[in-house]
Length: 189
Image (cartoon, rainbow, N blue to C red; front, side, top):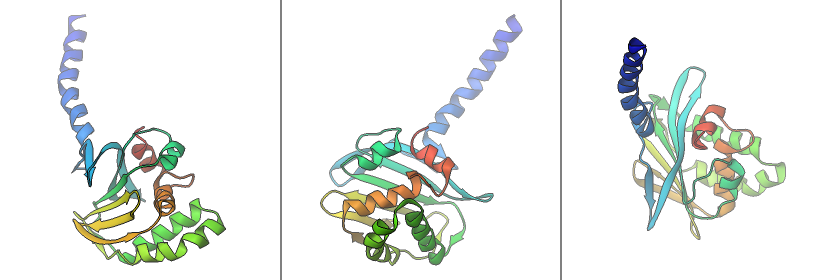
């Protein structure tokens, strides 16, 4: 009996720091519990890794005003939001990035909604260049302003409309996400 207690004590001493580390780091990327968007403080809703085949592409982080575990609630919620991509892969060509956005929009929107948003999607796509390991992309929804894209702290432009950000967010947490495991992480599950 004493041996079992010692083993349990030993495991808990080793596991506790690992659990603490898991709460603040994903795939080697430090993830804060909150982020600031203008004068608003947002809370981390969740984070996860976007993988394709066996490759880790980026760590995604979703920050919102009121965290929720339900995708529909997050999509419907008003207020500021941030979707962040922390690049892990050595190099992702701009064409692959923009093809991914288009594929994600088409998978999660009906034909009429896609057609209505397509001009703004083209504007959004023009903001991207080849991304490399270590790059940080923030896509911030700012109420009354739109979706501001910044890469490594440099603003690349703004796309108008809350409907655009909602459609963009569906790429990750919609009915047909780019990566189901990442969706689960972004929902904090």
